[in-house]
Image 1 (cartoon, rainbow, N blue to C red):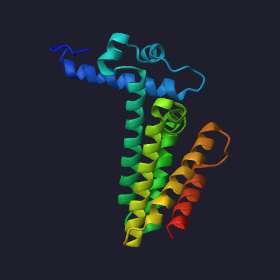
Image 2 (image 1 turned 60 degrees about the vertical axis):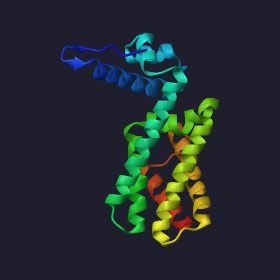
Image 3 (image 1 turned 135 degrees about the vertical axis):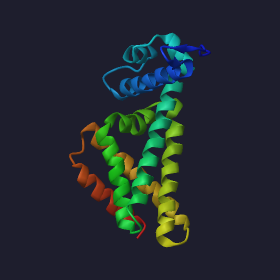
Image 4 (image 1 turned 90 degrees about the vertical axis):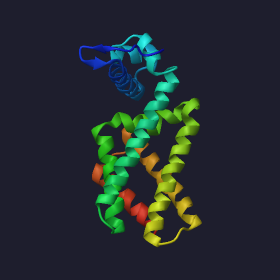
Length: 200
C-alpha cells in the first residue's frame, strides 16, 4: 500500500509510516517470542494497536514481518558484539570476553530477541535456511577474529567457528528455555574459554 503524502500535526507521511512500521516490528517480536501464543497477523496488529491496512503498508505478509525482525536482531547482535570487541583493545582474551558479554547483555535486556533469532526462527520452515545462513555468517566472523589473533587464515578456523557458534546457540537455547541453570557470568566465561580453546 502506498504511503499518503502530506504533513499531519507536524509529522510527515514518511515519518508516520516509519513509526507504524517500528510498532509493528516490536509487536511481531513480542508475539513471536511468546511460546504461549500463536503468531498471527491479527495478534501482531492487536499488539501494535494498528489495523491490517497499516500492516500491509509495511509488509507483504506475516512471514515478511518475521523475516524483517530476524534480520534486525541479527544486525544488532553483530554490531553490538563487534563494537564491544573493538573497544576492548588488542588482547584476544579481553576482546572475546567483551564480545560475548555484549551478546549476553543484549539477551538479558530483551530476551525476546534471543528467542526469536535462535529458537523460533529455526522452527519455521520459511526462515530455517536463513537462520542457518546467519549462523554461518557469525561463524565466519569468529574465524575473522581468529585470523587477527593468528596473523594468517586457516581453513580450520571456519570449522572451529561453526563449532563455537553452534555450541553457543545450543547453550543459549537451553538457557532461554529455563532448562539450563547458569548465570550470565558463567555463560560469558564458558563461551570465552571455548573460543580461546578452539583457536588457541
